[in-house]
Length: 267
Image 1: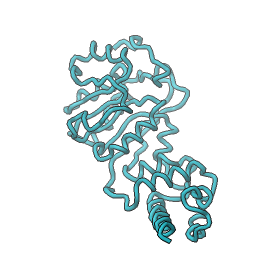
Image 2: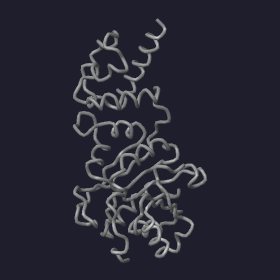
Image 3: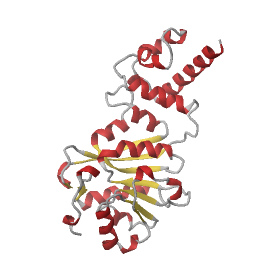
Image 4: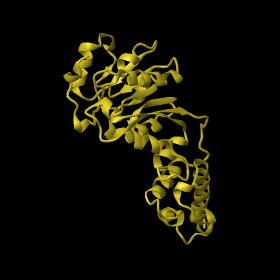
C-alpha cells in the first residue's frame, strides 16, 4: 500500500499510522467484544481497516476526507457499500447497523477525540465496547482515578458507564506526519450500570461545573447550582475539590443537591 497517496490534512487532525504491527495490535483490541459489527472512524488509507476486515464480522468505516474515500474504494473492493462518507459527529448511529449494537474503533482524529467519546456516551446502549488510539494525554485523562491531577470531566462521565483499560503507548515516529505528542491505545467496555441512581442531566451539570473550576472547593464551584447560603453547603463534602470525588460520590452529591433544590423550591 503506497503511503504517499493521500496527503495527511492538518485541519482534519490526520496522522497516518505506518507501523503494520501496531495496526494489527489495535485491530485485535476489538476481539474482547466478539461477533457484533465494527464501525471504524477515520480509516484514512485503511492501515487498520485491512486487519479489521480479516476478522469474521461486518465492518463499516466513516470517513470525511474525500481523498481517503477515493483511495479506499480503489484499494479495498470488499468495502464496497460499507464506506460512510460523512462526519462521524453528525451521524445518527442507530441507523448504521439497523439499530444493532457495534464496536467503535479507530485511529481517531486527534482534534475531535474528546467529542467522539461524548458522542459514544450519548449512544452507550448501542456501543458496548469502544477501542482505539488517541493522544496519550487524553487516554490518561479517561483512565485516571480520583485524587489524580489528570482526573476530570471525561474520566467521571466515561467511568460512570464504562470500564477503562489503558492498553499501550505508541511513539511519535510510527506516524506520517509524526504528531507532537505520544499516543495510546485504550479500550472501554460497558459496565453493569443501567441506571446511575440519580438525575443524569444534573449529574453531568455538576461534574462539568465543578471541574471547570477544579482548584476551587465544591462549595464555591457549585454555587451557580446550589447557593452557598443553603444549609447543605455547610456539609464537609463541600470542603473537597472535584478530583477528590469518585463516580459514586458524584452520584450521591447529585442526589443530595437535587433534594436540596426541590426543598428550596417548595419552601
